Amino acid sequence: MEYPGLSGRLERVRATILEAQAAGGWSHPVTIVAITKTHGPEAVRAAVAAGLGDVGENRVQEALPKQDATAGLPVAWHLVGGLQRNKARHAVGRFGLIHSVDRLELGQELARRTVAGRQAVLVQVNCSREPQKGGVAPDALPHLLDDLLALDGLEVRGLMTMAALTDDERAQRGVFHHLRDLRDDAERRGIRLPVLSMGMSGDFPVAVESGATMIRLGTILFGGRTP
Image (cartoon, rainbow, N blue to C red; front, top):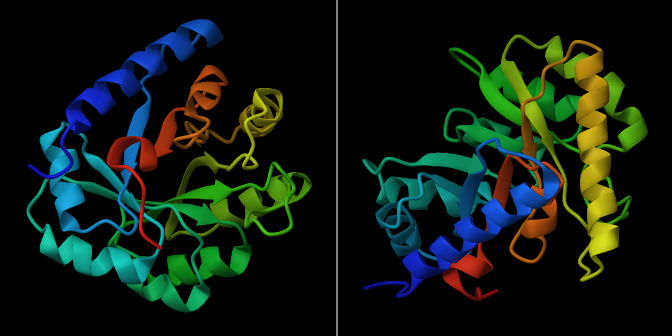
C-alpha cells in the first residue's frame, strides 16, 4: 500500500479541525485539499482511497500529466501555486478552482480563455506583506475585486493567503484574521466570498480557529517531498 498510515493521519487532522473550530466558535465545513506536489499519481489515488476528493498542485506543468494518469477518479483539482499569464491557457478548464489570481491581467487572460461557463478562482492576498510572496496588497484588494467581478468568464469564490513561515501563532493568527476581515469588508459591500483558503501543514489549526473554510495540506498527509 502506498502512503501507509494516511488514513490515521487524516483522522487526526479531522480531530484537530473539530477542536480548532470549537475554540474559534465555528461550525461550517472545512475542505481539506490534499497537496500532491512532487508526489506521483499514487498520492492522488491514496488520497481518494482515504476519502479525500480535493487535490491540489502548485504547478500546471506537473499537474496536467498527473491528471491524465488519474483520469476517472472522483477528484476536484485545485491549482494553489502562482500562475504565469502565459500558462493560463493550460489551466482554464483543467482545475475546478484556481487559488492564486492576484492581478487583473491574469484574471483577464483566464476569462478570455474560458470557452463555456466560468472559471472559478480565489484572489490571493499578501496579508503577511512579504516581498517574495505573490498576492495583491490588502489595500488594493477592493479595487481588484471590482475589476475581476466585471469579467464574464470568472467566478470569484473567495480569498486565499499564506502566513509567514514561523511557529509564532500570534503572527499566524494576525495574517488569518486579516484575511477574514478583508472578506467581511467585501461582504459588507455586497460581494459574497464564501471561501477562505488559508492554512497549511504547519499552521492549519490556527487558520481553522480563525475561520478557514479550506486548508491545503501536503507534508502532514504524505510526508516530506523531494525537490
